[in-house]
Length: 152
Image (cartoon, rainbow, N blue to C red; front, side, top):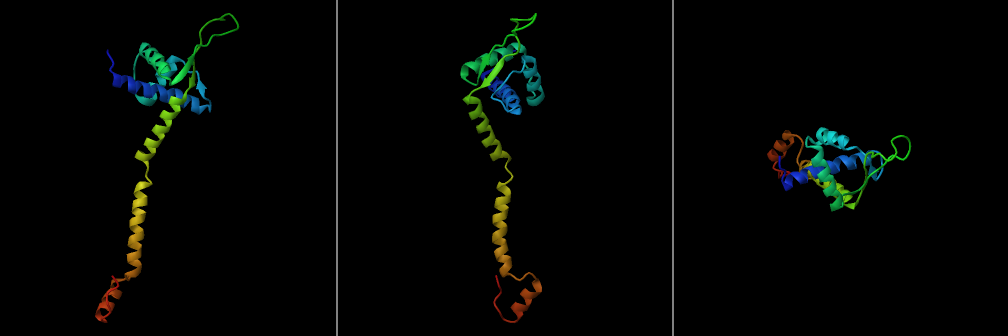
């Protein structure tokens, strides 16, 4: 299966979301999830499914583009000394600017404050009218019968 540039962009955002979410969850600027963990969370949280090879290709490209810094980790002690463990991902500025853009976009799209503010402004104007207008229709009829001008 061949992937296009737009597929790469979608996968890139999903991978960035997983790594930054794991980092922010532990209140750190770094995280070290395994590749299988990243794939599991991308599928669970973003609904995307792709191979381990595609993930490695995308991680390498994202590191070159400046999303994060990848540091290979080795075990230092015991029988397994010198064996590779999970990679350390240190977040860089591009991730934070991407997160800020996403936050601004989501606050604009998902903001429910726009409609109430508009409704609030409308209701203030209507409240001014209703303060002048009698709250009871009988009072309006009486004022019209007595020859007084209507309050509206």
